[in-house]
Image (cartoon, rainbow, N blue to C red):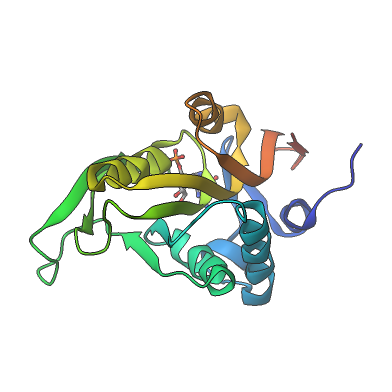
Amino acid sequence: MAELNLLQKKIMADGRIISGDILKVDSFLNHQIDVPFISELGKIFKELFADRPINKILTIEASGIGVACLTAVHMRVPVVFAKKSAGSNMDAEVYSTEIKSFTHNKVNHVVVSQKYLNGGDHILIIDDFLANGCAVQGLIDLVDQAGGTVEGVGICIEKGFQGGGDALRARGINLKSLAIIEKMDAKSGKIVFR
Ligand code: 5GP
Protein backbone atom coordinates (compact mmCIF):
# COMPACT_ATOMS: atom_id res chain seq x y z
CA MET A 1 0.00 0.00 0.00
CA ALA A 2 1.32 3.48 -0.85
CA GLU A 3 2.45 5.65 2.05
CA LEU A 4 -0.19 8.11 3.21
CA ASN A 5 0.34 11.74 2.23
CA LEU A 6 0.34 14.69 4.65
CA LEU A 7 -3.43 15.25 4.63
CA GLN A 8 -4.32 11.56 4.63
CA LYS A 9 -2.18 11.09 7.77
CA LYS A 10 -3.88 14.05 9.44
CA ILE A 11 -7.34 12.68 8.59
CA MET A 12 -6.39 9.31 10.09
CA ALA A 13 -5.09 11.00 13.24
CA ASP A 14 -7.74 13.68 13.81
CA GLY A 15 -10.80 12.98 11.59
CA ARG A 16 -14.04 11.58 12.97
CA ILE A 17 -16.69 9.86 10.90
CA ILE A 18 -20.18 11.09 11.72
CA SER A 19 -22.85 8.72 10.43
CA GLY A 20 -22.23 7.12 7.06
CA ASP A 21 -21.10 9.98 4.92
CA ILE A 22 -19.92 12.97 6.98
CA LEU A 23 -16.32 13.35 8.04
CA LYS A 24 -15.58 15.83 10.81
CA VAL A 25 -12.23 17.56 10.65
CA ASP A 26 -13.12 20.35 13.05
CA SER A 27 -9.81 20.29 14.87
CA PHE A 28 -7.73 21.51 11.90
CA LEU A 29 -9.92 22.59 8.96
CA ASN A 30 -13.59 23.33 9.66
CA HIS A 31 -13.79 25.01 13.03
CA GLN A 32 -10.37 25.37 14.61
CA ILE A 33 -7.86 25.99 11.82
CA ASP A 34 -4.32 24.61 12.04
CA VAL A 35 -2.84 27.51 10.11
CA PRO A 36 0.70 26.19 9.51
CA PHE A 37 -0.72 22.84 8.39
CA ILE A 38 -3.34 24.32 6.03
CA SER A 39 -0.66 26.66 4.70
CA GLU A 40 1.33 23.54 3.71
CA LEU A 41 -1.73 22.37 1.76
CA GLY A 42 -1.85 25.81 0.13
CA LYS A 43 1.75 25.35 -1.00
CA ILE A 44 0.83 21.99 -2.56
CA PHE A 45 -2.10 23.60 -4.43
CA LYS A 46 0.27 26.24 -5.75
CA GLU A 47 2.57 23.51 -7.14
CA LEU A 48 -0.31 21.45 -8.56
CA PHE A 49 -1.65 24.40 -10.56
CA ALA A 50 1.69 26.06 -11.37
CA ASP A 51 1.18 25.53 -15.12
CA ARG A 52 -2.05 27.59 -15.17
CA PRO A 53 -2.28 31.40 -15.52
CA ILE A 54 -4.38 31.89 -12.37
CA ASN A 55 -5.13 35.46 -11.27
CA LYS A 56 -7.82 34.84 -8.64
CA ILE A 57 -9.13 32.20 -6.25
CA LEU A 58 -12.87 31.66 -5.81
CA THR A 59 -14.42 29.81 -2.87
CA ILE A 60 -17.67 29.77 -0.90
CA GLU A 61 -18.33 30.87 2.67
CA ALA A 62 -17.67 29.79 5.25
CA SER A 63 -15.34 26.84 5.49
CA GLY A 64 -13.63 27.31 2.11
CA ILE A 65 -12.30 30.74 3.08
CA GLY A 66 -9.45 29.60 5.34
CA VAL A 67 -7.86 27.20 2.89
CA ALA A 68 -8.46 29.61 -0.02
CA CYS A 69 -6.62 32.41 1.80
CA LEU A 70 -3.77 30.14 2.86
CA THR A 71 -3.38 29.10 -0.78
CA ALA A 72 -3.59 32.70 -1.99
CA VAL A 73 -0.72 33.72 0.29
CA HIS A 74 1.57 31.40 -1.69
CA MET A 75 0.07 32.21 -5.10
CA ARG A 76 -0.08 35.95 -4.41
CA VAL A 77 -3.56 36.41 -5.86
CA PRO A 78 -6.79 37.74 -4.32
CA VAL A 79 -9.56 35.54 -2.93
CA VAL A 80 -13.24 36.10 -3.70
CA PHE A 81 -15.78 34.14 -1.69
CA ALA A 82 -19.33 33.56 -2.82
CA LYS A 83 -21.84 34.74 -0.21
CA LYS A 84 -24.79 32.67 0.86
CA SER A 85 -27.11 35.60 1.36
CA ALA A 86 -27.21 39.03 -0.22
CA GLY A 87 -27.03 41.38 2.78
CA SER A 88 -28.14 44.98 2.62
CA ASN A 89 -24.52 46.08 2.07
CA MET A 90 -24.19 43.85 -1.03
CA ASP A 91 -23.84 45.45 -4.45
CA ALA A 92 -26.98 45.40 -6.59
CA GLU A 93 -25.14 43.90 -9.56
CA VAL A 94 -24.38 40.31 -8.72
CA TYR A 95 -23.96 36.95 -10.37
CA SER A 96 -26.12 34.42 -8.56
CA THR A 97 -26.79 30.72 -8.44
CA GLU A 98 -28.49 28.11 -6.26
CA ILE A 99 -26.36 25.61 -4.34
CA LYS A 100 -27.79 22.68 -2.41
CA SER A 101 -25.94 22.44 0.87
CA PHE A 102 -24.71 18.96 1.61
CA THR A 103 -24.30 19.46 5.34
CA HIS A 104 -27.44 21.54 5.98
CA ASN A 105 -29.78 19.91 3.44
CA LYS A 106 -31.16 23.19 2.11
CA VAL A 107 -30.73 25.28 -1.01
CA ASN A 108 -28.68 28.45 -0.65
CA HIS A 109 -28.99 31.43 -2.96
CA VAL A 110 -25.33 32.31 -3.54
CA VAL A 111 -24.00 35.59 -4.93
CA VAL A 112 -20.79 37.30 -6.02
CA SER A 113 -20.58 40.99 -6.88
CA GLN A 114 -19.98 41.59 -10.59
CA LYS A 115 -17.12 43.86 -9.50
CA TYR A 116 -15.05 40.91 -8.37
CA LEU A 117 -15.54 38.38 -11.19
CA ASN A 118 -15.11 39.25 -14.84
CA GLY A 119 -14.41 37.98 -18.31
CA GLY A 120 -10.65 38.35 -18.03
CA ASP A 121 -10.39 36.23 -14.89
CA HIS A 122 -8.54 32.91 -14.79
CA ILE A 123 -9.96 31.26 -11.72
CA LEU A 124 -8.81 28.55 -9.34
CA ILE A 125 -11.76 27.23 -7.32
CA ILE A 126 -10.77 26.02 -3.84
CA ASP A 127 -12.94 24.27 -1.25
CA ASP A 128 -12.52 22.12 1.85
CA PHE A 129 -14.75 19.19 0.81
CA LEU A 130 -16.21 17.74 -2.36
CA ALA A 131 -19.18 15.41 -1.95
CA ASN A 132 -21.93 15.47 -4.60
CA GLY A 133 -20.28 18.40 -6.34
CA CYS A 134 -23.08 20.99 -5.93
CA ALA A 135 -20.84 23.65 -4.38
CA VAL A 136 -18.18 23.38 -7.10
CA GLN A 137 -20.78 23.27 -9.88
CA GLY A 138 -22.38 26.43 -8.49
CA LEU A 139 -19.02 28.19 -8.36
CA ILE A 140 -18.27 27.14 -11.97
CA ASP A 141 -21.69 28.54 -12.92
CA LEU A 142 -20.75 31.92 -11.38
CA VAL A 143 -17.46 32.02 -13.33
CA ASP A 144 -19.32 31.10 -16.54
CA GLN A 145 -21.84 33.92 -15.97
CA ALA A 146 -18.92 36.36 -15.70
CA GLY A 147 -17.33 34.95 -18.87
CA GLY A 148 -14.20 33.93 -16.96
CA THR A 149 -12.14 30.76 -17.27
CA VAL A 150 -11.99 28.00 -14.67
CA GLU A 151 -8.34 26.93 -14.74
CA GLY A 152 -8.73 24.33 -12.05
CA VAL A 153 -10.47 23.10 -8.92
CA GLY A 154 -8.46 22.29 -5.79
CA ILE A 155 -10.15 20.29 -3.04
CA CYS A 156 -8.75 19.21 0.31
CA ILE A 157 -10.97 16.19 0.93
CA GLU A 158 -12.99 14.52 -1.82
CA LYS A 159 -15.42 11.79 -0.82
CA GLY A 160 -15.01 9.69 -3.95
CA PHE A 161 -17.91 7.41 -3.10
CA GLN A 162 -20.35 10.33 -3.54
CA GLY A 163 -19.44 10.79 -7.18
CA GLY A 164 -19.26 14.60 -7.49
CA GLY A 165 -15.56 14.56 -8.33
CA ASP A 166 -15.81 11.95 -11.04
CA ALA A 167 -18.71 13.83 -12.66
CA LEU A 168 -16.54 16.97 -12.80
CA ARG A 169 -13.59 15.00 -14.24
CA ALA A 170 -15.90 13.53 -16.87
CA ARG A 171 -16.76 17.12 -17.90
CA GLY A 172 -13.04 17.80 -18.42
CA ILE A 173 -12.63 19.97 -15.31
CA ASN A 174 -9.01 20.11 -14.09
CA LEU A 175 -9.81 18.79 -10.59
CA LYS A 176 -7.11 17.95 -8.06
CA SER A 177 -8.00 16.60 -4.63
CA LEU A 178 -5.37 16.18 -1.93
CA ALA A 179 -7.14 13.22 -0.31
CA ILE A 180 -9.82 11.09 -1.95
CA ILE A 181 -11.81 8.86 0.38
CA GLU A 182 -13.07 5.75 -1.38
CA LYS A 183 -14.78 4.21 1.65
CA MET A 184 -15.33 5.07 5.28
CA ASP A 185 -17.13 3.31 8.07
CA ALA A 186 -18.50 5.10 11.13
CA LYS A 187 -18.59 1.95 13.28
CA SER A 188 -15.00 0.79 12.83
CA GLY A 189 -13.59 4.24 12.00
CA LYS A 190 -11.91 2.66 8.98
CA ILE A 191 -11.05 4.95 6.04
CA VAL A 192 -9.83 3.74 2.66
CA PHE A 193 -8.17 6.26 0.32
CA ARG A 194 -8.12 6.06 -3.47
P1 5GP B 1 -21.10 19.10 -2.27
O1 5GP B 1 -21.65 20.40 -2.68
O2 5GP B 1 -19.91 18.66 -3.09
O3 5GP B 1 -22.13 18.01 -2.16
O4 5GP B 1 -20.57 19.29 -0.77
C1 5GP B 1 -19.46 20.10 -0.53
C2 5GP B 1 -19.74 21.09 0.55
O5 5GP B 1 -20.42 20.49 1.65
C3 5GP B 1 -18.43 21.62 1.09
O6 5GP B 1 -18.41 23.03 0.84
C4 5GP B 1 -18.44 21.33 2.57
O7 5GP B 1 -18.54 22.52 3.31
C5 5GP B 1 -19.65 20.47 2.82
N1 5GP B 1 -19.32 19.05 3.10
C6 5GP B 1 -19.61 17.99 2.31
N2 5GP B 1 -19.26 16.85 2.90
C7 5GP B 1 -18.72 17.16 4.08
C8 5GP B 1 -18.17 16.38 5.15
O8 5GP B 1 -18.09 15.14 5.12
N3 5GP B 1 -17.70 17.07 6.22
C9 5GP B 1 -17.75 18.41 6.30
N4 5GP B 1 -17.26 18.99 7.41
N5 5GP B 1 -18.27 19.19 5.32
C10 5GP B 1 -18.76 18.57 4.21
